[in-house]
Amino acid sequence: MIESLLATTPSKRPVVLLRSSAMTAVRIAAKRQAPSEICGVVRAVVQNEGIEIRSLALAPNCARDTVWGFRLRRKDAEARKNTWLTEHGRLSGIFHSHTKRSAQPSRLDMVTMRRWPGIHLIAALDGPFRVFLSHDRIVEADIRVI
Image (cartoon, rainbow, N blue to C red):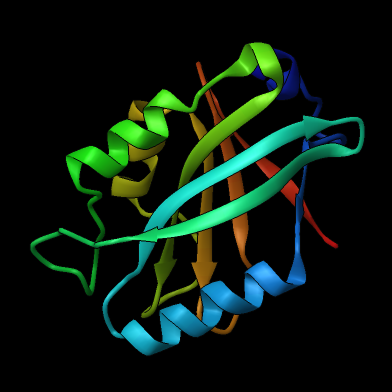
């Protein structure tokens, strides 16, 4: 299923539906923790219109340098991994904030996307969010705010 979502052309990218209330909540949490990055787990479902993010659950950032990076605890990462259930149209992933820069993925973000298949949402404090889907490759998706 994730493979079909990634089978896009340059003119047609996957669509991720994100509630404006979720965007606001992530931005508020990110501003409270700034300059440290926040991180957490994404849970989503695949629908006809696209992938709908159903929940964003904050998790502790265990990175050595939380200003320039994030790291999930093993139990949070495993919880995310265990909900990667494509046979029922459910997906999971990771989100984190960038407090000192735009939502452009860093080199380390790209490594994380390759290591952890799924949804990767990057939240900028004041700019637009960006979302990527990864499996055997990484594709940026369009965000539709609902």
